Amino acid sequence: MLERVKEFLASLNNSQEEQASMSFATALAALMVEVMRADNEVMPQELEMVAKLLQRQCQLSAQSSELIRSEAQQLVDTAIDLHRFIKVVNEHTDELARIEVIELMWMVAFSDGKLDPQEDYTVRKIAGLMYVAHGDFISAKLRAKDALGLAE
Image (cartoon, rainbow, N blue to C red; front, side, top):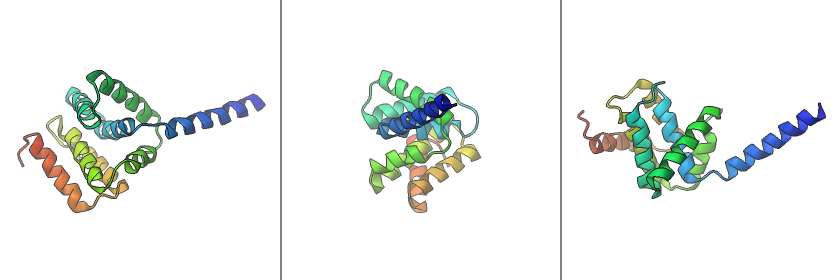
């Protein structure tokens, strides 16, 4: 019995260390993965978009972005909520950068050519947790649609 308690406490310490050492790229990837998975259908275009955006935003190689995306998928699978990812992103960004992060979320949501209501809800939830104003949220959505060449 005492061994189980020790194992449990050790696992708590390990998870706290993992959270403390999470990189900005991993946290950003986790948020994009959450948007990608929101409609319960992961499309190849979405996987590619996440990797492409990680490469561009975090100056990563293609291989590194794929590894970080895979790691983020595993983290999201076991996550209870998004707060630990949001916290890392908020700590590494200012207001303008957070708006840009929301634009990235929209690009992932639109990457398969359609916007599912659950994807919309997830981006809206993330924007709220990142303290992005509604007007900036909408502007980011329109810029993402324009960047992807999607018509109104």
